[in-house]
Image 1 (cartoon, rainbow, N blue to C red):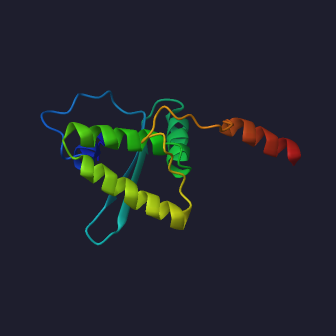
Image 2 (cartoon, one colour; image 1 turned 90 degrees about the horizontal axis):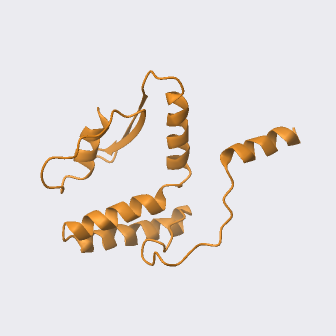
Length: 134
């Protein structure tokens, strides 16, 4: 499945033709069927280093580094399609899951002017520190 096909399935409310995208270097897609089974597909192209582009993408997805971007995208799309109530239902549901699962949703989506006081450490720096401790 091409990424652009998944985006169409992920966001069926978009009107008109989707914009043409460049061929993806890597992709990680998730779908869920009516029974709740989650299907995962992963791919990267044949260019040198594309598997590492995939690794970066997978890391960001698996360790919640795309939460703010995803919620901002969803909010913008819902507002554009006059579906703001859907966004707030999704956000409230995810906030409830946060309490159970420990997700890290931020209020930056709701109040973008608020800045987080958080230290950002590159994964490569953590790996270097771990190697030095061994």
